[in-house]
Length: 99
Image 1 (cartoon, rainbow, N blue to C red):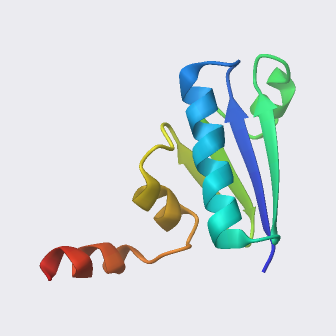
Image 2 (image 1 turned 30 degrees about the vertical axis):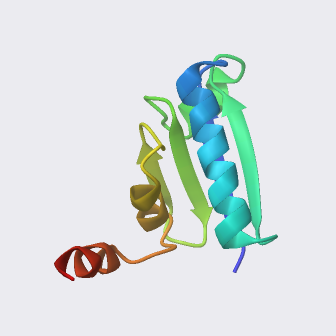
Image 3 (image 1 turned 135 degrees about the horizontal axis):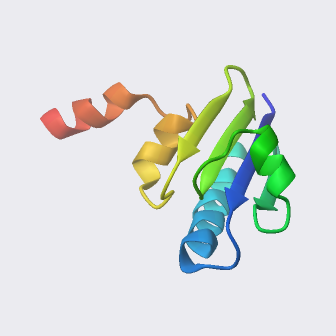
């Protein structure tokens, strides 16, 4: 299964750098070679942000596999990011907490 991801950032801020680093690490460890990641700076490409209706950064859009998903805000919470990308199931977290 191929993942197509688009990450919207705003300039070279700390949150932008952290989002890129976290996402790259997850892609390398969980998706191997089966992903395409495009990083878009909204300051340089505002028309792309408008087209995808991005209102805050960072925003991660998972185009493929369907359904389309948007993760808005900090990408530093690894478990939530993995759930948002459907790489782990949410119930795995709650099962782990109950043990």
